[in-house]
Length: 409
Image (cartoon, rainbow, N blue to C red; front, side, top):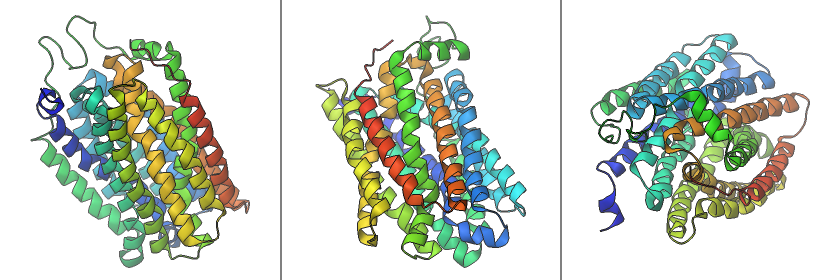
């Protein structure tokens, strides 16, 4: 019997449906970073305040992630996803009507609340449907939607130059609301075993508990290493997301629209290939090496670190973009394999909670990085220093993966 036939019904359909949700999830959050000039013309703010718009999103998003993950372990994952999509799409539309910095900041905080529920629920739902031999690729396909969304985020700056900064928020907010209504008819949880409320909670086990789940995660040394690894990797990742359009704009004198499209387009196009390549490679290698989901990103990060370092030091735009693409390609190996790694070391009943805890610290570190980068810019420190520090952090993350020794619970 082939792997495809042994998968549960709707396994790949679910991945396909979530592909578009992931695309909207990242498009809505990233496009603000590509329209800095247009926003500041209408709503005056300092560089640190502009960085704070993303920082407050990440702090709220990360702070709620463990609880949001638990909701997906406790209730139907598909229902959590639908409510999250509908809520953040409405808030995206609402953002377009902000008139002051305080209103824009509040909208970003609300965005963090509404989006926190999506990623843990989506990745756990995919893990419910897929086993070890298809799990990395399934996650890679889903992550490719996120990469496309991040890449399309560059449209924000381009649309802002032509129609004003609020236009993109109005359009994509309405698109998200429409897609949420469509998903009501198609997105489903994997059918649960008889007597169970959730496919990851067998009938003979007690109901899931938030504190029990967190305790089981932190009793596992491998999870603690994974938590530190994922958080440190956020330094380079969020510095690129939050400030690369500005870096390209100032270093190579590109327009706001071109800088935004270049920063997100080259990076995410390469990452799109990377999540699929990293998924296929890890799945194939997993047939003979159980730790393949750790080894594939380890190799990738050893290549990604020189890539982002070269971007920060070169004076050639083609070289900078090529190095940025190399970073995106190989760093994506880590993105597509994080849930498969977590699945090897955690109780299946608490996969979403576990990923929520990972998101919690990762977002706090990422938010602090973006705000600190803005503060350094106000102090006239070049962004290249931030990216060089991020390259060093990426190498450390590669080393940490070598010490992850997952033991299924």
